[in-house]
Length: 176
Image 1 (spheres, rainbow, N blue to C red):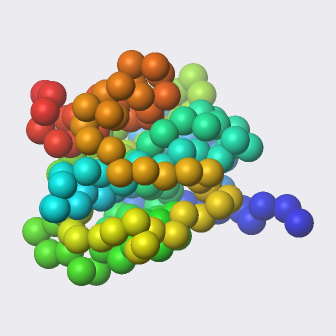
Image 2 (cartoon, rainbow, N blue to C red):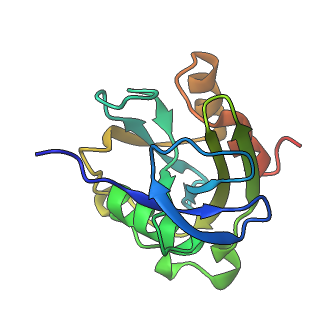
């Protein structure tokens, strides 16, 4: 059975929806962007973050460690996308989080006209109580998970095994 085509809203450089949607693989022109989201999921009890290891059949960065996230589908807001991605990938609910946490702590833009790979990324930081038993990883997305300190994540990054490390530090306010 083939993979379903994922359609995404196309945004302009001001993060406004253009009214167009496109397949996730569509190369974009100057001034056209897709939206992606990432979630820092932190436990208040020990300050550790949930990280997942990408499935080995992923086209990009197979087997690398990362924080949960993905693409915002057509019709979704950034917050709706991050809630869906967190639920799909970890089985955790961010609905328990305060409204203050439901605003991105960091956003950035990538414009790669050569590859047509233009996107915005919103990073959220959710701090709420959850335990190992609450986490149920989606096997098609990830092959492993663990709770890690920023030092452990730094170690993985040093071995080139962690994605979005600099952006994670920026989102946490550790690096400008």
